[in-house]
Image 1 (tube, rainbow, N blue to C red):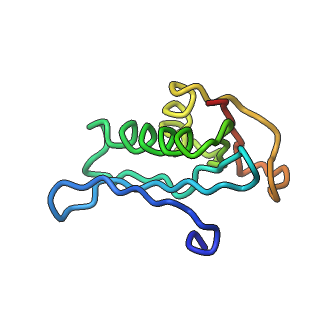
Image 2: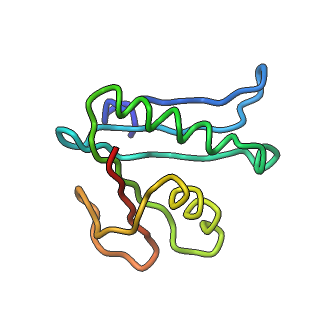
Length: 112
């Protein structure tokens, strides 16, 4: 659960409409994990995901984090998310934290 992990949640909104969300949680000193990135279907292609990701990375950097990692799906439907992460400097990596190798998961990381 995000609250138990002391995560910071960011929400992109247009008035009262939620367009996208993302969270970041420190998993060990200097290392954070991106959690729960999602952009509403009607907001895709408008830069919402990029804006949320930038806010998350800026927040992590501002709080002393030097590495950010994430887990995302390996199915074709996750290709746009993977492309977003690659465009922002993330590269594939082995499982981190308590994750284990899983064919349904892709693990990525980057330095800040």
